Structure formats: structure tokens, C-alpha cells
Image 1 (tube, rainbow, N blue to C red):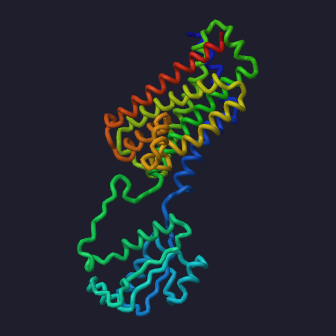
Image 2 (cartoon, rainbow, N blue to C red):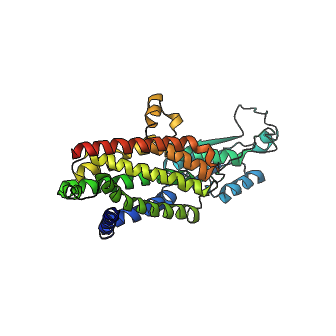
Length: 363
């Protein structure tokens, strides 16, 4: 046991004395969580809106004031109908609201369309589809007249009523950071020993090979736990992401995912002979599938059937799904047991295959 602890101490000192490793392991996750939480946002704000009103009544002026008061819309003033095309092409407005001459009379009697034209039209610049879709949604909601549309539905948004993008990105970036950082650091560490020839020196020591591998993984697991703590604190107190579910469940699921990521790094180290190869496999080849097929950005339900099947072997898919349920929806841990057991099976399979291939190489 004393030899095993000596190897753990040796690897810990090696990591602490390497400022580049510490920088990657501790600073990069913080930068990424803040970048995705604040800088990269899917929320659409400041949609510029101009208004065409041949006869601006008091009702139309109140609507214009409501547009200006909205935190999502920016009122750019009244323009003549002849300037609609020029305003949109010049980028002075993203949308133009066109009111009919007799807007008040038509809204009082929605069935009245003497000239076949609607009481109000929305003309959107759809060159940016995200802005156009969001702006049209904001304006439809704002222009709905409760007196004229008696059957207008009431909309309720659950779990994320303010539609904050951080609620979506934080679980996703957690799944991305943990598996990339852990896999990269572990695979490169072991491959470096093989590449420099020091692995053979370690293997002739009295400590068994399995304990040597575990001794190299324990310090990285500890670093990953520090990352987990910092990310959860930033998510809760800086990005205001709720911890609606069990914190113990979130931590337990994350620790299992960290073990899986370390096992993946061990597996990569068995198929890579140089540090460059290990980096290419763990950082480049894994990055695209993680982002595209994990549900972090794109809904899995919208993918073709074959890609949905492929996504089942992406560990981040199950982790992100579980963390969203625990963190955002506030479900009990019992509701994510399926995800937990899938990740546990993946972890056991990776450890088994990696150790077998590692022992085969030793022979």
C-alpha cells in the first residue's frame, strides 16, 4: 500500500509542478462555463422595429410605446409605407409593423375586411432566421388584442419561464468539459510515460500495473472534482441556474461521469503511441460527435433515425439528459436511474476493455 501511495504522491507532484496542466485542468472549464453562460446566447434581444401608420390613433401610439418598452424590441419610429423596402435593406429595422388606415374599426370587428386586407401586417427581414422567428413571436404576442381575440390561448412556460439560454447550455457544457478534460489529461499522461520510456521503469517496480494506472488516475479525478465544484458554484451563483433537484443526485451522477471519462482516457492511451495521436483522438475526433450527437445544441428527436441510434453510444447524451432533469426540472434521482445505469455499464465496459488491452500490450 505504501508503494501505491508513493505513486499517487509522485503523480500529484508531477501535475502540480506543471503549470500548463494546471491551467488547462482548472482555468479552461471556468472560462468555458462563463463563455457559454454569458457570451454565447441563443436569446434574441434588441429586435429593431419600425411602424407604418397612415392614421396613427391613440391605440396605435400605445402599441408603439409598448414596443419601445419591451426589453426584446427597439422602437425605431414611424416611417412612410414607401420606405419599408429601403429601411429593411439598409438594416435600419429588422421588422416593420404596418397598420391599416382603419385599424381601430377593424379590430373592433375582426370579421370586417372590406378590401380583403388584414388590420395589421408584420414584414420581417428573414435574412437572419433566428432574429426573424423570435421577433415575429414577440410582436405577435404584443399585438394580440384580448378584446378582439376572445379565444387567445394562455401560454405558460415551465422550468425556464424566462427562456434563459444558460439553463440549456450549463448541463451541456458540463457534459462536454468533463469528458474532454479528463480524457485528454489521462490519455496524454499515460502515453507520455510510454513515449519517453519511463513506463517500463514503472512496470518493473514491485507495484502491480493496475495500481500504477490507478495511481495516475486518482490525481486527475481529484482535479476533476475541483472542476465539478467550481462549475456548480458558478452555475448557481453567477449564472443563476437553479439546483431544483437533489444536489447529492447531481454530484453522484457527475462523479460517475468523471470515472467514465477517466476510463475513456485510459482506453485512448492503449490505442495511441504518441501524445499527438492521443490529443487528436481525445480532443479533435471526439469533439464533433460530442457537440452534434449529445443533445447539447441540437435536439436528438429531430435527427434521422440512424443518427439517433449512433447517439446512444455517446456518454454525454445520457449525462446531459440526467443533469437537465435533476438541475432544471427538479425531478428526483429515481427518475434518472435509467441514465445512471447506462453510464455505469459504459464505465465498466470501458475499464474492462482498456485494462485488457493495456495488459496485452505489456505482454
